[in-house]
Image (cartoon, rainbow, N blue to C red; front, side, top):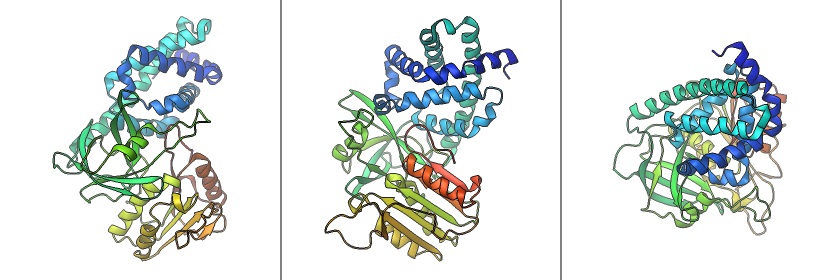
Amino acid sequence: MLDSTVRQTVKATAPVLETHGVDLTRHFYARMFQHNPELREVFNQGHQRSGTQQQALAMAVAAYARHIDDPSVLAPVLERIAHKHVSLGIRAEHYGIVGRHLLASISEVLGDAATPAVIDAWAQAYGQLADVLIGLEGSLYQAASEQPGGWTGWRTFRVLRKQAESDEITSFELAPADGGQVPPFKPGQYVSVRVVVPELGHRQPRQYSLSDAPGRGHLRISVKREAGDRSEAALPEGMVSNHLHQRLAEGDVIEVAPPAGDFFLHEERDTPVVLISAGVGITPMMAMLEHLHAQRSRRPVRFFHAARHAGAQAFAPRVRQLVQGLPDGAAWIVHEEAIDGVTGTAHDALGRLDLTDQSLPSNADHYVCGPRGFMAAQIEVLRARGVPQERIHAEAFGTGGVAA
């Protein structure tokens, strides 16, 4: 435990970090990549270009400063970070590198405000945080390596099948290239994949939710091709997603990290299940729905999904098939707009998904995944309907998160 003087010194920097945090984290990443260029392969360079990684780190550093008296408040956030780190292969030795550049950046960006006392206090605070994360990650690494078919780090998988699910989303079924076993995972978790991006000249990792049930001899990811927007720097074209769509073929190999993530179906409960998603946020919900169907679950299941239009809609026929095979299952799919000439049963309504008047089973666990604005809106409705916080489980793709 840090002594009171150290905690007060760190807490006093919170307002400065909230004001100058992005400048600090931008400087930190530039400094670290200059001195340790090998770490460019660990960090998402797309998020670096858009600035979302710098923003997320700035918020995390400021939050740690605010809660330094009781870091346990941040336990759910640290658990999520630990899963991300394990999926990227971050090890204990990386913390010394990060700490060195973070302290140097505090000194270089804050100038006279970064007194020796402030730097010393942050060195101790960072050491405490690093110890917590190293401990959490060590447990996750051990669990990943000890399960049947488990491993840590990167393992070569072969693409068994490549299947277009919509105009934007393509699925890839992956199996170990060594012919070994596929480990179990919890429906809703993700894996990291790593490929060489020629435009960058080095490898890049990305996390993608597993979109099929466990126990089927393969891992399936369903990837949205991020076209980007050249008019907006914050929306760059997805380097890895486009590589997978355009260049990765059946029979090719790709590096994969073990399944990870703290967003998953709670199988120890017999409560009803409500799955709420938008866009590519449907992918972890498909793993949950496939698993519930495979297990012949008798839990009531409600599947709500929103897509922009029929061309962007993935898995609609499979969703219908799965919910019809459950004792108490139903689906409601909404498209924001219609496409001329496209008819059928892909959607139930046009417009935005609105849960206000939908029939929801009582005492259900609600799983929410999609763009942050969509998630925030759905969570607000659930809370207004009296759903307790512990029954709302949310997953945000990319950096940061959505409070549930």
